[in-house]
Length: 234
Ligand code: HEM
Image 1: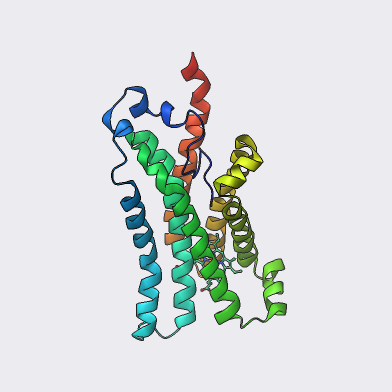
Image 2: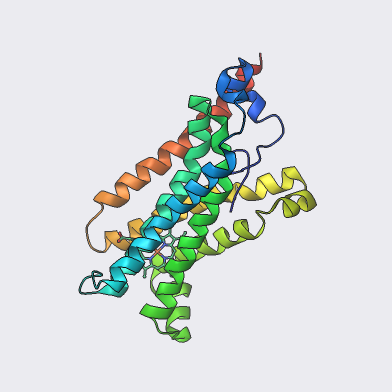
């Protein structure tokens, strides 16, 4: 998934790390040797698999509740959104804390968001719809608008995942690639809309509201920084 400097790149755009406070003032976090690099990636990878493992264990021990398909759909949907929020949080947390090493996890986290999105979509078309393509097409083309919106978000996610390798970035050119990967902001907004719309029908907006505030904060911070940038140069 996305790796743009402003959203989710493992490799920061030119000058990106150097412009962090820690790098500017030469603090230790920016220059610490990368001793734990490979191991920390393995740890994050294993942690990101925990929600899937939990589903497998629940499935094997008959703990998925009265409606297992609904449980799996909701769990994978929630983790898609959580992974998306964590991916979007990397840049703001890095900027505020100076922990530039966080960038090394961003691409993996973004790909995990897409992975859980794929499981979510597969649960829908396989376990929920049993490959009834006519019904799926009807849902996706507007019969159930929250599904239309979720589908668009997922298609955009797969586009970012497909263009995430370094080789693709080199071929596209850094600027074009970064511009494309800003689509992650639209994905976040569409995901909130998907969740909101689904819950609005049930008059239960408490949780979508929390996620909406998190996403608004993560995107709002970027807007504020973008607006401040020219005045900082003077
Ligand atoms: C980026 C993409 C997506 C995200 C972030 C996302 C997220 C979510 C979330 C958070 C929920 C609610 C979980 C809960 O109730 O706790 C949900 C439910 C659901 N989503 Fe998605 N979703 C996405 C894409 C899709 C796609 C592509 C489809 C199908 C085409 C889909 C179909 C559904 C369905 C059927 C439900 C459950 C509705 C119900 O239980 O009544 N979603 N999704």
